[in-house]
Amino acid sequence: LRAIGILTPTSKWMECQCLTAKELLVYFDDDGNGALSADELSTALQFMSFEDPPTKEDIEDVFMKLLPPKAVELDLEIIGMAMTAVSKKEEHSSVAYSVMVKDIAKMNKEQSNAAIFFREMVQYMKATGTNAHDLFVKLDDQKLGALTGREITEGFRCLVTVMGQASPAFEIDNAFLLHDPQGLQKFTK
Image 1 (tube, one colour):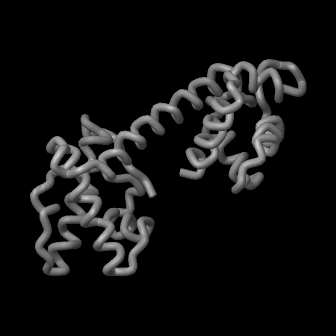
Image 2 (image 1 turned 90 degrees about the horizontal axis):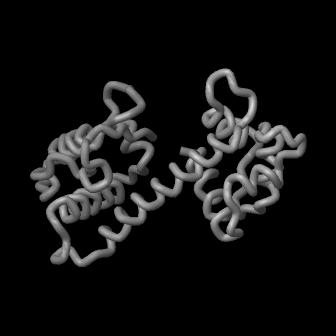
């Protein structure tokens, strides 16, 4: 999750500066080998002067997550793929956000199900003083670290049922269909 928290503002910064992944690589590739080392990536991120700058450990974590097996540095292809993936994720998030502010009468079934479910989830968290991380831990009763949208939906339904509350969210099979139409994506803390 922290990797997305670093790559998203990096992608937005590059977009604002009208920089491509290739131009970023050329500018920060100090040794001219066509790839970024962890130190060169760190220099690039420091140069971007984010309000909440990543720590050295965060940068190393992102670097290791992006690094292909047997590679020692990030080449243009990997940097480009990471920025494309982040852009696509932002696109999905934007669609999901627009549903939450849209008039429910103008929503299709998937949109209204998501809006109802997440409204109920927020109300539950407020009523119980639970944050999103703690709720995920409660739903992940098998300690797998990742759940499908259907598992989150069913787990939340069980939590609310135990509390003895009636909810329109009971009728929803998978509140995540809008974000994950195939139902294959695993969500993590």
